[in-house]
Structure formats: structure tokens, C-alpha cells
Length: 124
Image (cartoon, rainbow, N blue to C red; front, side):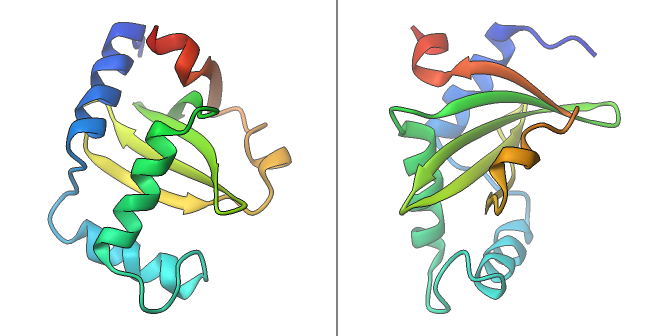
């Protein structure tokens, strides 16, 4: 599956304008982030989406194309509150997940990740 840079940029623009989750997905992901200690136990939907927005607008955000089976996803990495967060969404702009990467040095070496470069360089 070939994915063009304009398609990736359109997906990024959609998610930057409006974070969209599939029905029931946000609640499940928020509970998982709390359970894993990525967010405080009293974190709200707004808190979670604020972290996502921080990643999407971070001046050092790094862009990957992530492939899983026959699907391609946009994956953006940035440090928020001294933690490396990864935000992933599909080409239609639907959120897949956002989570703390515990061991970024090895995690991003997985063959599923194709490094695209810094978001600020690609968007200009």
C-alpha cells in the first residue's frame, strides 16, 4: 500500500482540527492510559486530548508512517511532561491510540515504523 505525503498531511490536518474517536474507543483508551500510569487517575477526556494536541503541535514532533498488516497509519512522536508520547491515527483522521512509549530507543526501531522526518519540516 503506497501512501503519498499529501495524503499523510491531509490526515494530520484533519486530526489537528478535530480529534475524532470511533464510538467507545476514547473511553477504553483513557481507562488504559490511567491504568498504566500514563495519565493521573483523575484525568479527564480533556486532559487526554490536551496531551494529544500537545504532541500534534510540538515543535520537535517526529513523523512516522506505521504499517500494520495491510493498513497504514500516521504516527507522531513528541515529548510531553518528560515522557515520550506517540499519537497514532488512520489516513481518514480517526484516532487509533495515544500512549507513552516506555523504551523509545528500541520501540521506534521496529520495521513497522518508517521515519518520515520532523513534522515542522514536512508541513512547510
